[in-house]
Image (cartoon, rainbow, N blue to C red; front, side):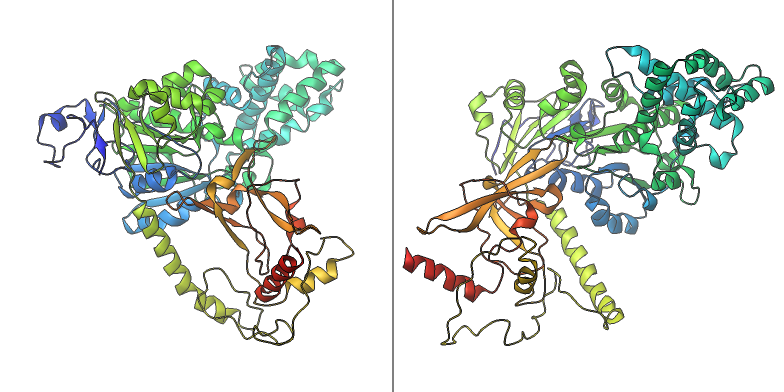
Length: 615
C-alpha cells in the first residue's frame, strides 16, 4: 500500500469505537462518502461531512464512491440516479435492510412515485394560501435569464397569478402545475378579448375575495393584454417556462396520490429516495431543479421545527453528475448551512470547469471550500491547478497521476495519496443481479416457449445447430468467395438482411477497445456521445479504409481497472471486422456500419487472406 503523508487526526486505525481524542472531538465527523482508498476505512472528516468527488468519466465515481456509500447505510439517502442503474442494483439490498425505497423518475414519469410541487404552498394565519410560497415556486419556474428583466418579471407575474388561480378555484386533485400549464394555453385568447375565459375567471375571484392574490397579480398585467406584440412575447416566455410540465407522465406524477412522496416520512423513517434523471435529454432540467429546491427547503423547515434544529436521522444527499445538468438555486448558501441540520452532501462531477460554468467561479469556490475532496485524476488544467495548490504538489505530478491512485484533500490534515480500492461492492451487486436474472430466465422462457427466443449476452447455453447453408464447415475443401462490405443503401437492403441473419442466433455486437481510443464529446444539445473509429474495408492497394461513429453514452462502458472499453452497438448479428484503429477518416452514421463484414468468421478470415495475397 502506498500512502504518503498519513495524517494523525483523520484516521484512527487502533480504535474503531472512537475512544481517542480525535473521535471525541466534535470537529471530526463520519463522512457521507466512502473513500475508495486502501488504509482510509476509518477516515474522519473535519468540520463537516460534505464531499466533492472529482474525476473523468469511467474513473469510478459511481462504482467506487456512490454505491459503497449507500451500502454503508449510515442514515437515510437521497441519490441522483443518472442512468437508472443505481436503483436497480441497490434496491434489493436496501429493502432487505428494512429501508423504504422510492424512485422519483423524471425520465419515465409515468412509472414514478407521486410528487406535486404545489403541495409546498402552505396557509397563513387567515387560512389563505401563502403568497410567499407561491412567489418562490414561480421564481424557480421562471428565473430571470435575459439582459432585459422586464419580460421575465412580467412572465413570472403571470405564472404567479395562474398558480394562485389554480389553488384558489380548483379542487385539491386539480391543484398542480399541469393545471397551471393548461391555463397558460388560454393566455392567447385574452388579447383584446374581455370575454375570454381567464379574464372572467380572474374577475370572478376579485368579486368573491377582494384580497385574492390571483386577482391582484392579474391586475398588475391586465392592461398589457391589449398590446399585440408585448402580450405575445410574454406568452412565449410563460409557455417556455411551463413547457416541461405538460406531458402525460408529469400529469400523473403531479396529480396522483397512490404512492406520494412525503418529506416528513423521508426524514423520520428508514428511507432511500432515488431521483432518476437523464444525462442525454435536458427537457426535464427545470422540473428537476424545482424538486431539489423544494427538497432542501422542506428538509430545512423540518429540521428548524425541532428543538435541536437537526433532523432525527442523518440525511445523506448524493448528487451524481452534479455539474452537467440541473442547477439548484442558492446552492452555495445551502451547502454552507446543511451541516448544522444533520445533512451531508456528496457531489460527483468531472471537472471544476463544469462547476464554474454552472455556478460561476466565486460560487464554485464557495462550494469547494465547504467540502472535502476525493480526486481520481484527469487532464483538465484548471482542476489540476486547483488540486496542485490545495495538495501542495507540483502541477506535473497532478497531471501525471496514475489511474490506480487517489488523492483525499480534507480540512485539518495534509493531502493523502493512496492506492485506489477495487469496487468490490459494485462487483458483488452485479453478481447478485446476474443471479436474479438467471433465476428469472427459465420462467420467462417457459412463458414464451411458443414465441421466437433470441439469445441474450447473459445466456451461457450453446447456440442451436445452424443450417448447413448458413455457414460452410471450416475444414471444407470448397472455398467461399470473400465478401466485401455491403453498402447500407435501400437497393442493398434485402441482401444486407440476409447476411445479418446468417450464423448464430441474433445477439448484440459488443466491441472491445482500449479506452484511450474512445473520446467523449458533448453535443450542441448538451447530450453526451462517444466517438470511436474502425476499419470499414480495403482499398485496391490493400491499405485499409477507416470510419468513425458516434454512440450514445449509455451504450459505452469503461473499465477503469483493465483500461478497456466495451461498446454495445445493438446490431443483431455477428461481426468480426469492426476493429478500432488510431486513424480517423470521415464520419458515418451508426446505421451505415451495419453491414461492415457481418457474417461468419471463416468468410472474414478468407477475405483477409485473399486481400493479403493480392497485396
